[in-house]
Length: 187
Image (cartoon, rainbow, N blue to C red; front, side, top):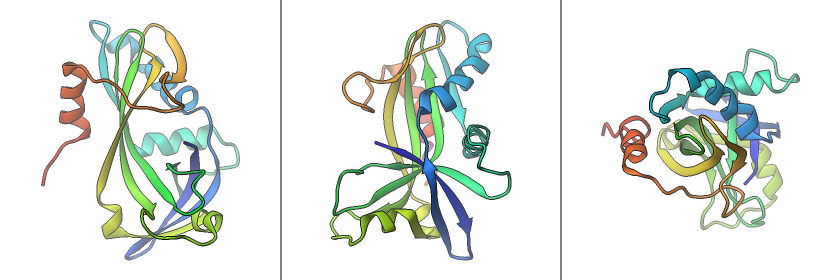
């Protein structure tokens, strides 16, 4: 599942997403600095934390010398990169983590950029490079759970073992944190 940097331009009723570049090493470049920051303030070898959309944008800019302050840069996941008939792109709005001693489950709050589930799409790559999104569609929150093999004290900066990026088993304390902070239903 590749991650990309997109420039997001806001118009009256829509957003325009223009693909800038691929972004590799998410755990090392975005999550590790947060783990380093919170290590000393966590208690009992576990800690909940959040990376906001502004935090993510700032990380993208600081990790890519070609990006300049000004436009809104966002991180977008391509959920179906090998599918030649569908486009499935989601912006990472916020990242919530619940770090234990040696691993960190994550809750990604996503927003739909484009998801062609049942429609044949011509010229896939062009459809992924420049995308227009209706603001009403973009307001819907979608969630993904996964984990990295590093926690507050030890581990490796890798995604979970089953696949490149995969699902996480959530114990009650982590699930409670994600329900309260990530999946804060207000409707």
